[in-house]
Amino acid sequence: MGRPNVVVIYADDLGYGDVGCFGSDDVRTPHLDGLAARGIRLTDWYSNSPVCSPSRAALLTGLHPVHAGVQEILGGKRGTPGLPEQPTLATRLRDEGYRTGIFGKWHLGVGDGYRPLDRGFERHFGFLAGCVDYYSHIFYWGQGVNPVHDLWDDGEEVYDNGRYLTEVIAEKAVDFIAGAGDEPFFAYVPFNAPHYPMHAPAEYMDRFPGLPDDRRIMAAMIAAMDDGVGRILDALDAAGIADDTIVFFSSDNGPSTESRNWLNGEEIDYQGGSSGGLRGNKGSLFDGGIRVPAIISWPACLPQGVSLTAPATMMDLLPTLLEAAGAPAAEGIDGQSVLEVLRGADADERTLLDERTLFWEYGPQLAARRGRYKLTLSAREHLGGPFDPASSILVDLTADPAETTDVSAQHPTIAAALRADLLGWAAEFGWDPVSWLPRS
Image 1 (tube, rainbow, N blue to C red):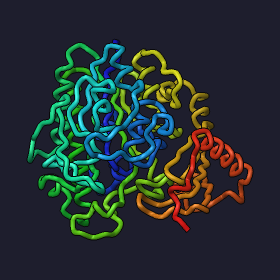
Image 2 (cartoon, one colour):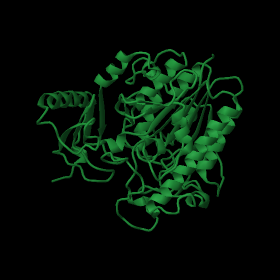
Image 3 (cartoon, helix red, strand yellow):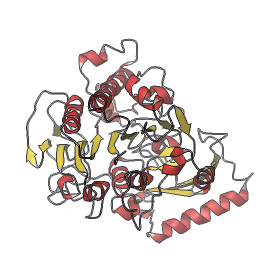
Image 4 (cartoon, rainbow, N blue to C red):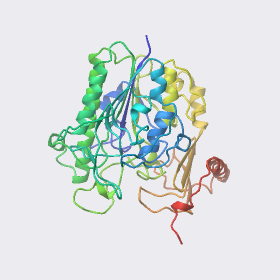
């Protein structure tokens, strides 16, 4: 067997409870469920950030966002800088002879020198900002930013007005796969669904007639993306390369409760997405904001129809894929390969993952997980919500996945050790929460 092809499919603001094989009983995702049946369901997979841009930076660099140079949501105005120049998964695989292409949302810089073709991708179709209208492909959010058309094909601005972008992204990814020939390829397919604006064709709305309006449009957008995933998987089958292709699917962060998701002018928290019973949403370091549905499939080399419960993060994907491709290991990154754990070859490796300490920061929030215990400081529930600078909660995720009960009094040694490690880690990059907190 030669080097495996690699397909990374990324959803946008998709919650842990928005996929059938992760427990959804109202959103049907048959293609993602099928991918899980021929792969591994990653039950404790985490984004490295509860918002878009830093999560994507970690995926592509193997670094925590604080080291990748992107810690916040980037703007969509033309000229906006983004991910600093550094090796990415695309550059590393390109240097190993892979064809590289991205189809969908970038959100790691709009200005010249910060675009996909500047970061290792040889083929690019999609948009550069954080979101666009699904039919006009115009970005029109943010203070002081007039509407910006944002659809690009290999650096050239193109217009495809009236076509539903989720379907176009899948089409372009399929074309790339079909034209790959005998060369190994890396296809990065970051869909913008189900991120606002809440748009879906009637055929998808008609699949969910009994759901409340907010959940119905969310379900329709997810179903359209799931169909796009199905088209990509069909293209791999048609090319006879499905067994020798690694397919990874996940979401950049948890579901959004932003009021701009509403289509009726309401300015209240949106409840269309589901965190699957986890606490928090996009923008929160509770698990609902950072624990995401994830699946990996490689039929030729990985088990099928199983689950991995050991915690891992998006920055682990780069070293895992490099090892699978037989490429040189990346030096100086934060992530670690989980390939042997996925293969099920080494129980000791799984134990090491359980004992590893994972860290997060977003604004004044900090969090750390080691094994079954997780400590969260200065937490908030969702993007735009208030922070509680005095809050500190230690939870046992095995017994309490909804993070409802502080057990620090029962486990003071664990709480103190995690706090010391977390604050020590934050001090390494000059963490300063003051600018985020309300002025007295």
